[in-house]
Length: 270
Figure 1: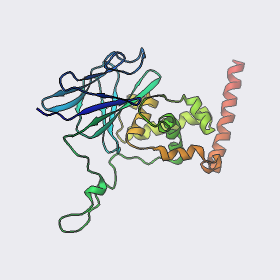
Figure 2 (figure 1 turned 45 degrees about the vertical axis):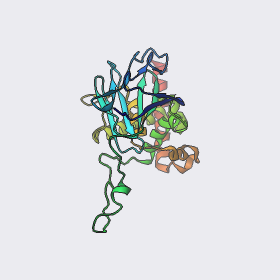
Figure 3 (figure 1 turned 180 degrees about the horizontal axis):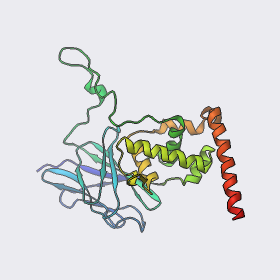
């Protein structure tokens, strides 16, 4: 039987997968990700079964986000779940402790072919053109400040040239990067996560009316996998500060700084 060639790429290193033995990914897997105590010894497994290649989550606590390279498909892989490797290239993100990892899976002859909106709307049998997929289901519209926040959190990943390892900035570091107070950053982070959760994004809620404690990691994985932000958006961070700050937001920042000073003073007098 002829099998499609499957390759896993992490930190510039390529590993071919044998259909007979498969490939394990984790702290002590065939692809040894990192000596990270938060990472399972064997977390993900690429295997061949019943004529299909599969990616399985064999861990007990961690989840993984799987997407195609165009941001048209996304799967949230819980412990015990598996998905078929049905596309030519899949990108995988997961977070263990303070570190977020990503790697690529290449399938030489995938079972399915990704059809983009441009290809689908190129022309019909009668010669007419039909616009297909013009609006992405579940796509949310972010305000300029919300977009800036997501770009700041994703910056280490957007500046990388290959799959590998990065750490998501702390809220304090991201706030400083944007020239915001921590109060303002946390409030806008709440708003972004709530907006995405309301639109159906999983992993941002820890319970009824409660945002998840690891929401920043899930937000970054979602933003990167759906192309909510791209490398081009780094210009928003590199541009002049006044290009993305309105007079209203400047006033809000001044009020927030005053509030922060009052909180600090109260804590000092306590």
